[in-house]
Length: 68
Image (cartoon, rainbow, N blue to C red; front, side, top):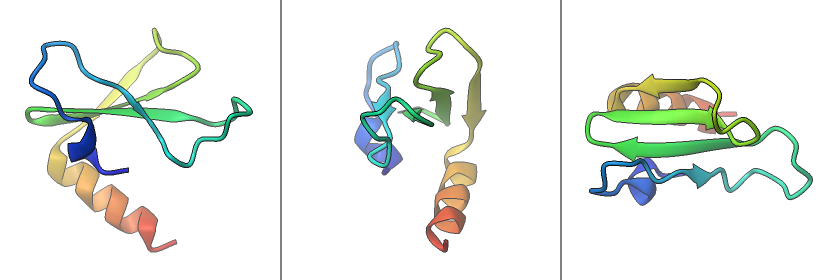
C-alpha cells in the first residue's frame, strides 16, 4: 500500500484498508497518511489504538516488509 494514495488535505484522516486484507474479516489494517505522520489501526477496532509513524519510518518499514 502506498501511503501517498491515502493522503488528503482534510482535517480528518482518510483511512485506506490494506489491499492484502481479505473479505473474511481476518487480520486487517488500515493506513491514513497525513502531513508529517502515517497512522495505522486495526480495521476491526476503529475506535481502538492508533500507531503513528513519520513518513520516513513508514517507508523504511514498507521497504523491509517487501523483502519478504
